[in-house]
Image (cartoon, rainbow, N blue to C red; front, side, top):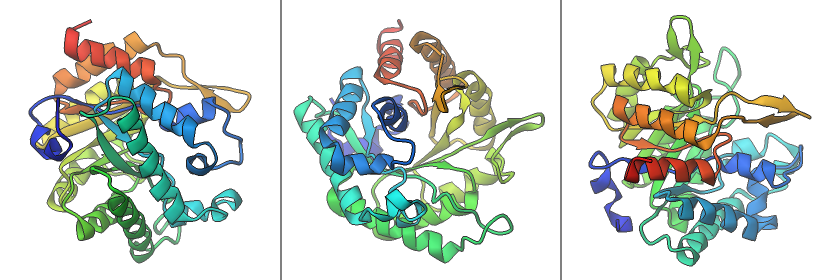
Length: 302
């Protein structure tokens, strides 16, 4: 059983298993169309604890706080978010994660502070400045750090500039492990972010800025991500983390529905590990059943 203070020692020595799609879980549990998932930390705390617990019991070794959209800039982008206090949202998320670990046998689990994108764009698409992004990320990172997370997961970043500001903000306040996941799209010429960044373009700057592990999550399916892993291994020897979606969604009544089955997902994750991943997990549509299937495959080969 791993001890919480030994996470950095475990990186690269074994395949670490992250949790799955918290946002998808909250949507399935009844999140309103105009509601903010992070508000559930305050209004539905037991539901959030139960979701964390389900991933812990499925075998996840790193669970992520419900703070993907918890930066001040992201919260202020909606009426519902503006009504929330970023300090309360993030502190409560860490508290709920810890309660889940304590209640449900998570002695060997680590709690990751989840930082997602602001939802804004740098020029020439938008008007976001590096200073604004950095300030928002640093505020969120400071709250998560004080509240007691074990590591940081900077995820679903579509612009290397924004990812770098988030990582720099984290590194200004702590030396805790920090993992960065960029989200890529499949193009005829390979894998690129929405802003045209390739794996080669993002790897060196993130590692030089202090990322302990880099990789990709969201947007693409587990089968599509296999070749992306191989592209990463061509440009870096660093530990790699990948968390794909549960296939490509179909829209039903305005809600994305994922059709992939857990065993199919586990088949692809096994290939992702063989291709060079040091850590794996799931993103949109991946329930505890998906993480359990991956855990069983990684530990028992079934």
